[in-house]
Image (cartoon, rainbow, N blue to C red; front, side, top):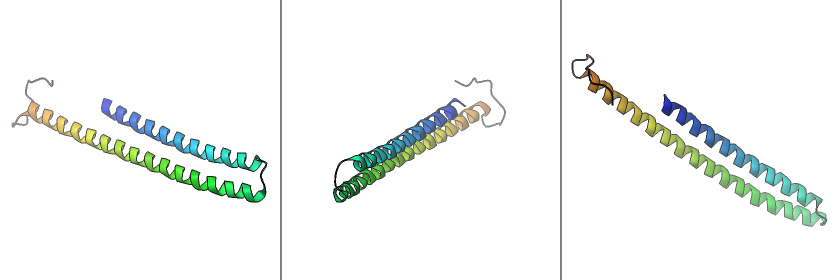
Length: 110
């Protein structure tokens, strides 16, 4: 039961971290756009800077999302491995207690 809670904690931490990264990137992009709109440049220059920044932020956001997805995939694989290992250990311990007769032995679980 303890490993189940740990797995949920890990998943929650990754999800919160991913949300925070995406929120930060969106906020930064909006802030940059507002700053450019308020800057004392010509309309043409402002549009050019907005376009350049939009490309740069779009690329950064894609990179951040890709990184978050990769990390989430790694965590999911770690959880799968932990669950699989836990099941194998449980099965081995259960078989060791029951032996080949199917009846529990007097051996305590270590």
